[in-house]
Length: 220
Image 1 (cartoon, rainbow, N blue to C red):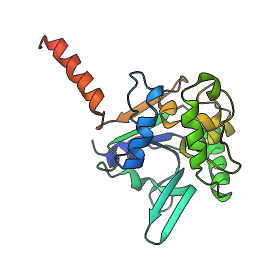
Image 2 (image 1 turned 90 degrees about the vertical axis):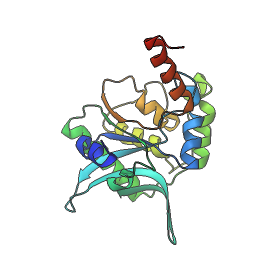
Image 3 (image 1 turned 90 degrees about the horizontal axis):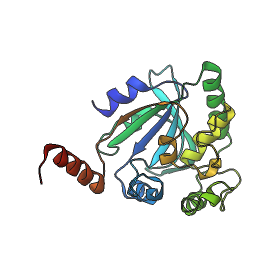
């Protein structure tokens, strides 16, 4: 299955999208989340976004906080984009859709909160992201407000949690919204269905899988 078929099959209002990119910044974010993974190696995920609706143009749209650099144009912060940007499997080998079973009113609340963030021009705060990375090494810090929190700023997974909070859902109980990472969303203890298409496991995970298969086959 390719990214196009996978994402279109699982898209629905209020669902959460995750991706793991191959560009240097995405790899850095994935590696920085190692303290949160079960095996202590890099996460599969580097970015999170919120599915909103399929519009008159026939395309699914998402709300996200991201750095979008194009010719003579830079957008840094909350923005609306077509889901199409994640159809490239080479750039985004790992994609996932998380379904937390929101009802129609909850999905609408998420959407309304997302549009408020976009209209308010919330910016992407690198300092908040650094504060989140520092907090990953301490359970105590994760339960406190982000040390480098800034007014009017949200990075990707913090934006998703902000929108879900409007629907009364705390995706990672006990961890403040501006300390939530893409990996945290994937590992949320709340009941949900996770649809995943993973191609880039990382060297360490590939080795572990190879060893598991070898052990099962009785091969040295």
